[in-house]
Amino acid sequence: MSRPRLLIDGDTLKLEEILQVSRHEVTVELAPEAAQRVQASRALVDRVAAGDTPSYGINTGFGTLAEVRIDRKDLRDLQRNLILSHACGVGNPLPLPEARVLLLLRANVLAKGFSGIRMETLQLAIAMLNKDVVPVVPERGSVGASGDLAPLAHLALVLIGEGEAFFEGVRMPSKQALEKAGLKPVVLEAKEGLTLINGTQAMCAVGTLTQLRAELLADVADIAGAMTVEGLLGSHKPFLPEIHAVRPHAGQKAVAEHLRRILKGSELVETHVNCSKVQDPYSLRCIPQVHGSAREGLAFARRILEVEVNSGTDNPLVFPDTGNIISGGNFHGQPISLAMDVVAMSLTQLSSISERRVEQMVNPSLSGLPAFLAKNSGLNSGFMIAQVTAAALVAESRILSHPASVDSIPSSAGREDHVSMGMTAALKGRQVSEFARSCLAIELLVAAQALDFRQPVKPGKGVLAAYELIRAKVPHMDRDRELHHDITAVTALVESGAIREAVQNASQ
Image 1 (cartoon, one colour):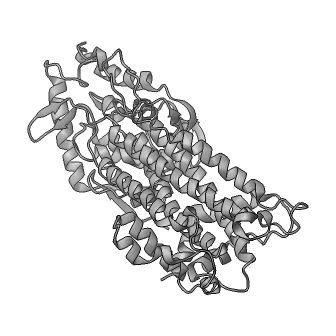
Image 2 (spheres, rainbow, N blue to C red; image 1 turned 135 degrees about the vertical axis):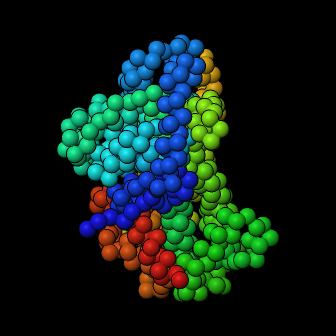
C-alpha cells in the first residue's frame, strides 16, 4: 500500500509532518515551485564558480582559511575534503527517527532555493528518505556555531558513498546501503559540501521530536495530577474558572480547564464535601499554576522550532534574484539552544511536582492511606522505592536543566568565537523528556493504586478512563512484585499517546 505524499518546499513544513517522517509513514516529494528555485540558485553558483572572483565556500577555503583561494581544477576535491574532515562525530548514533528527521530537515532547507545545491544531490537525499537509507550520525560533536557541522558531515558522507547508513534498520557501509536501495552516490560540485553541513538541522531534529513528546507529557501530567487529586480526595475548587480569570495566563487557564474536563462527573468529590480539611498541598492545589507555566515554556519553544525548520541557515546564502552570494550568520543555533533549555526546565517542573504528589500518596501521615499503598505494610514495601526512583530522576533532571545556551567555547582559531551549544541543549532536553515520561508513569501507577482503595466510589470520567486503561495492563498490587515491569508498561501507554487519547475520548 502506498504511503501518503508530503510535498516539501522549504516554507511550510509542520512539526506534526516531521513526526510522520520520523516514523517513515509518508513519501517525501519536492514541490515543483521549489525545484525551480533550486535550479535558479544553482545556476548562479555555477556562474560564480566559472569566474575568477573569490567567493567564500565556492572557490576559497573555510573558516579561518577563507582567504585561501582554491584553483578551479581543485573545487571537487575541496568539497569532498570538507566533508571528510568535518565528519568528527563521536558517541552513539542518532536513533533512526531523529536521523530521518535530520535528513528531512536538511532537504527542506535546500528546497528553499538559497543554498545552491544541485537538483541531483537534493533528489538523492529525498530518495534516501523514501527508500529508508538513513545516515549513521554520531550524536556528539557539535557546538552549534556554523550549524551542526559534524553531524551534518556524517549525513553528507552517505551522499558521496562514504561512511555508514542504516538500510531498512540494518547498519552497513553506505555504498552497500545505497546499492541495495538502487541509488548511486554523487560527486559534489562547487559549494555543495558547505551547503550540506551549514545549518541547525541536527539540533532541530532532536529538538522537534523532544518538543512533540514534551507536549504529550504536558497533557499526561494533567491526567496524572487529576488522578492523584481523586486518589487523595483533593478539592476541585482550586480549578474553578473564576480563580484563573483573575490571573489569566494562557497556560494556567488551559490546565485548569483541562482538569475540570478530566474530573467531570466525579462521585469521589461528593464524599468529602463537608470534610474538615481547609486546603490541599501545593502539589495538588497549584497544578494549574505549575503545569501552566510549563505549557507557556513549551509554547515558546514550538514557535521557535516552527520558524527554524523552515529557515535558510546556509552560509553563504545564494540570492538568484539579485545575483548576490552573501555570508552571514543564520547557521548560529542560539534560538534553538535557548528554546531547548526552556523545554528541559519546563519538563523538570512537571517531574518535580509529580514526584511530590507521589510522596503525598505513599506517605501515610499525608494520605490517610496504607503506608506506601501496600497491604500488610512491613511485610510488603509497596511503592516505597517507586517514589525513590522518581526522586532520582528529578534530581538528575535538575542538573540537566543547567542551561547550555549561556555557555560558549570558541572554536576554529577564534573565528567562531561565540557558539550556541544548541545540540547539547537538544540532547539534554531529550534526556529530561525521557525522565519526565518515567516520572509521570510512576505517578499514574501509584495513583491507580490509591484509587483502588477508594472503590467502589468512582472518580471523574477522564480519571476513570485512565485508570481502566492502566488496570487493563497492570493489575492491582496486593503483594510486592518487580515494579519495573509495571513502570515500563505504563510508560508505553504514555509514549504511545494511548493514555491521552482514552482520556480525551472520555472527557468530551
